Length: 374
Image (tube, rainbow, N blue to C red):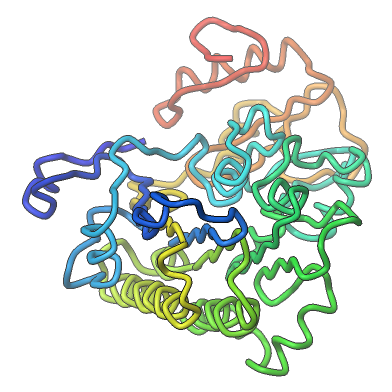
């Protein structure tokens, strides 16, 4: 986790600073309302996620709506991502309040032989999530999410995400969930029949690559369709920008700055919709990033390096795995190593090899080994 200089923010936020990559801006609009008895049903929480947003790009010029919200509300100074700082991992942590080691979701890409014995999996895609819930009795994610807790208490929820992470935020595993609780994720929905009304009004979800349009479609879906009659107890809007554009450019590049501007416009649309619903005074709005973003100095072909060193490293299996073979699952700047049958000799040799390399950082192991963390 990279810590940002407080001096940088001292110029922009004379009364407060943001010190780390993942950040929250929170505006409590109902401070006067709290002074009197207010029925719980009238209160709302709205979370808006800007995927991959770095706090050093928050400014009056780049993000006027967010800048205004921050100055009217509260900036969390000591908030940070969990490790690994990836979208699905932090999305799950955000809505469960527990660390990856307890939620059961530890990476964007994982190897779970009970789901697929030959390939790594993308943890958030529907067929994987549904299989995981089937095998675990509805415990693919070990703890209930905020949406599930609200629904069990009788409240209504709306989840709309421009990325596929949305299914992890509310999987609709409880058949008794209120029927007007909807989860949208990258143009799909749960319940499945909820999508038809949205597509009829907005057209289909834009194809991959049209990231700003996808965010705008998702914002309209929640503000114009899911909020048409009233604002639910809990809503979450997940914007894919600036993360998706930054992957194809770089933080601070003109396309990335345009993507940040797009997210700010979507935030402004959310606030305007709350005003139109006359719900602004009874709504707590949180704006949060799931992780930051940085460039890399080098990449390594880890499978080749390991195989050249005499290991049996794989990224997929064509035959049943053998003891000592290693499944590699890349997750950006982190790699998961699965040593088949927990072969102790192969594990020890792998750790020692990585410790002597010029590219490996901190190494985590299931069992305690010299120089590793467990």
